[in-house]
Length: 606
Image (cartoon, rainbow, N blue to C red; front, side, top):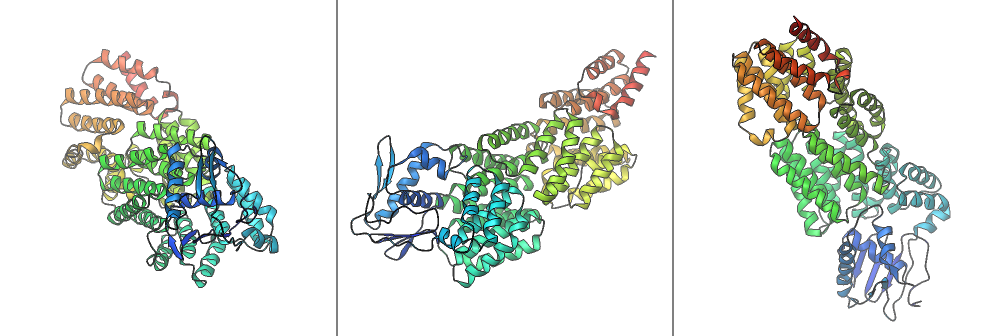
C-alpha cells in the first residue's frame, strides 16, 4: 500500500492532496496549484473512486457497477473517463498517476512525498449527531434502485442531526424518482440558504435546481420560475458546468408548460450546446429530448423525431444516468401519443418497460403505467385499460400531479370508445378541472350527444391555444373539426380544415393520423355527393387502422364504410364489412357501435 495516502476510510466527503493537486469531494472540485480544473461529473467520480481504493487494482466491472448502476455502458465510456482524468492530472505532471493493468483494471498511484488531508468527512459528521446506519441503508437502497426505502432511510438520517450537502442532494434526486419530492422541499430550501451564505454558489444552485424540478412537477410554475431566476445569480459567474445545462433544461421544460414554445426551444438549444461542449451525456440527452418536444409543438415533426432518435442512440451507447433515461423516454412517448403515432409509441413504451425491468428502475411509475395502459387500450383491451388508467390517476395525484389530468383525458377517450358517454363526460370534466385540455375527445363526445356547435367552438378554441399538448395534437383537432363543421352545417369550414391538413404532409405522417384524415375526407366527399370517393377513402382508413394494430379504430371505420356501402346500394359489400366487424375481437367492448350494426343487419336482411 502507498504510505503517502491515508488508510481507506468509509464513504464520505474527503479532501485528498497529492503533488500539486487537491481533490475536494465535498466541493466536487479538482484543483491544480490552486486553480480548478473542470471535470465532467462521471470523470470526477471515476477519479474519486480510484483514489478511495488506491490500495489495489480496481476491476473494470467494479467501476462500471459502482458508477453506472443499472446502465448498459459500452467499454469506451469507461476508457474515455479514465483518459480525461489522466489529461486533467497531466496539468500537474501526474498523467501517469492512474495506471492501467491489462485485463485487470485501473489503480491510482500517488506520487512520492504527497501529503494527504482528510477533511469534511460526511460519515463522521453524521455519526457525531446522526444515524450512520440509516445513511448506509440509504446508499444501499439507492444501489438497488429501491427509492421508497432510500427515502425512508434518508429521512431517518436527516432527523438524527442532518445530512451533509451531497447526501441531501442525493435524497432530493431519490425523492423525485419515488414521487415524494414534497418531502424534501424544506430540507432543500434550508440547504440552499446555508450554502449561499457560506459562499458555495455551485452547491446552492444544485439545491435550487432540484427545488425547481419538484415545484414544476407539482404544477407550481410561479415558484419554479422564481427559483430559476434565483439560480442564475449563482451560475452566471461560474465557468461552464453541468448545472448550467440543467438550468437550461428546466427553463425549457417550464417554458413549454407555460406555452412559450420559442423560449422552450431556445433553452433546449442552450442545454444541448453546453452538454456537447462539456462532453456531458446527461445534459446533451436532456437538451435533445426537450428540443424534440419543442419542435414537435412548433410543427416541425421530422426534425423533432430526429432529435428524439438521437437521444435514444445516446442512451444505447451508455454513460447516461438512470433518471435522465427516464426523462427522455417519457418525453418521447408523450410526443408520440399526442401525435397519434401509435406504432412509435408502442415501440418506445415496450423499450421503456424493458429498460425498467433490466435496470430495476422504478422511477416515473405512474406515467409509465399510464402510457402502457393507453397503448393497451389502442391494441383493443379497452376494459382492462380503463381500469388501469383509473387506478393510475390516483397514483399520479401523489407522484406526478402534472400528469393526473392527462390520465383522466385518456380515461375519457377509452370510455367514449366503449360507448359510455356519461363516464366519458365525467372523466373529461375531471381532466379539465385538473388543467388538462381534453380535446379532441370532448368534441367527439359532444357530437355523439348531438351538440355539434359546442363541439365546433371547443375545437376552434383548442386550435388557437399555445398549449404544447394541443399544438402536438393539431392534426387530431383538424380531423375532428371536419366532422363537427359538417354536423353543424358549416361545410366551408370543413373544407378549410382539410386544406390545412393537406398543406402540411409531415403533419399526417403517422398511419393512425392518415386513417383519421381519410375518414374526415370521406365525410366531406359523402356530404358533397362524391359517394365513390368517400367509400374509397373509408377503405383506406380501414387499412391504416389495421396496419397500426388498433382494432377499435378499425371497427369505427368499418361501420361507417358498411353504412355508406348500404346507402350506395352495394348490399353484398356492406354485408362483407359486417362479417369482418363481427370477427373483430374488440367489438364486444365497443358498445357504441352495436346499435349501428344491428340497424345495418336489419336493413340487409330486409
